[in-house]
Image 1 (cartoon, rainbow, N blue to C red):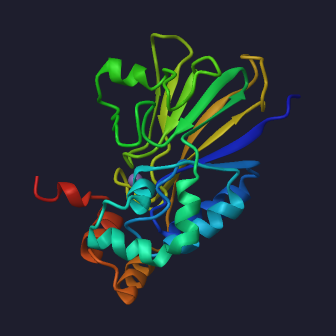
Image 2 (image 1 turned 90 degrees about the vertical axis):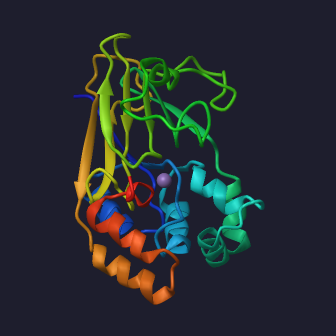
Image 3 (image 1 turned 120 degrees about the vertical axis):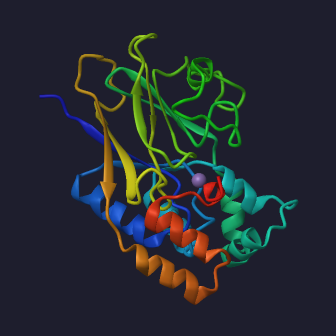
Length: 253
Ligand SMILES: [Mn+2]
């Protein structure tokens, strides 16, 4: 009997503490050994500081996302970003700035790579309906992912707040998945994450391997009330995203 390791892939928490707590409770109940967080810890929801402090302590890996970039960029003066930045304080901002771009590991023979948005950059967005060439670009080594290891077979990312699992017909043995969003899911309004299971660092492709998509309820109204109490800018837009999963940038389209 082979020993299987469970790795939780969480992403895009966006300052939503209630969604993170629901996710961590589920992760603990399933006996998960490692938690890998793909970034966008803050922005949007009201509790960025708490989310960052918990992830620093509980996640084995935290990666850098595009909202984390907004937080640390001195050329961004948007009032919403300024509100979040002030709450985070300099020490947490310095930690965000230190986060790595991607992580590679191996499960049941497969080389697995995780990053926030794509191999091309944190601001280069890839959708399940993107061109085939763009989708295959997710498996390429780039200056950002490094050239130290051969390209991966399985790639996981976040960024679009839209979870999916896409095995390729050609090339064989390749799968692209999106972990969805813990705190700002836009495909269905529940805390979402992905669970991987396989033999840790194992070379045998015939050992069991699985990718599972998990949806969890949490107290959305508590998050909205907390945002209002703290005076978070754009709380009405946040409320629509959290209740209905409708992106604020899409409301007028
Ligand atoms: Mn995001």
